[in-house]
Image: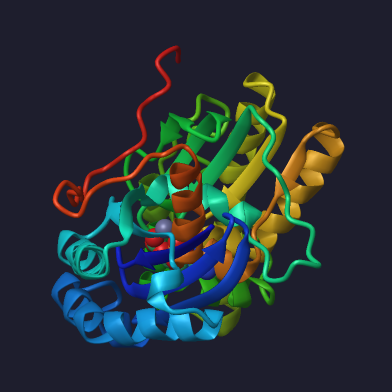
Length: 347
Ligand code: KG4
Ligand code: ZN
């Protein structure tokens, strides 16, 4: 089954072709990071206009790189939410137009569900792709979301915890802004942390021992207070130490809650996803914890290019919908910027 995936929920214009939900034939991502960098965050109107300019060439490139034509595609999977409404509309309206004009089936995808499918993606058939085992706990940590989700099978997703305020990636971005580092904050904070002492400052680890909800705004205030207290300019070493100490605090919280959820829900598998899951310290820490405390659980950490937003994961999600006969029609598909995952009712 060949699915064309389209993703425009935020600031990446992306299209991909995936075979049978796992084999990536092409994965094209046009990032707008440089466009938004001067503003220290995403400007929705700029993002939408850029999607309009890029979407058709990106789709064409994804077909060309996969070596197929549009009429070989079994279905188009497109992100219908959550995200920025003006950005989502570009992807969905383009997908609708192609579906209508070419007579191809269309499937609207929940971006939050799609991140987990990144864990099954492989670039060539020699790479043994991993089948999910359930119950499965997955952590999405990105610029817009921090969510712990329980998957009972390929089709049942339940939210067990999310952030009360800032998302983990948003916290990285805001701290980078406070320290006058480049946008997005995650990669630069990770780099600067390599040269810093993570024990130099003790920042809050909000709610680390309770429940599955997250809160990162207190941590941001902690860092701000420290910066204000230091008179004069921060030295480069001060900045590196703040980055390392902050990164350690975020990682500790993310890992502790994910491990606790896996234990309490008797998970067979843990998957991490979203931009923050590209973080080296997070990957190392969770891997070590799983090996020492959850020996029978398999941990999946997607390749870096599938951690951040991409359309291959949207196509993979689409494949599981198609296998279950779940399709939309171009008339019925509706963009929902606030789409979420239903809560786990027994918490
Ligand atoms: O999933 P993503 O590409 O887009 C959405 O937000 O949906 O995630 C982007 C976020 C940004 O906040 C960025 O700072 C963060 O992921 N990020 C990282 C790293 N790479 C990207 N955070 C920590 N460490 C990284 N290496
Ligand atoms: Zn995302």
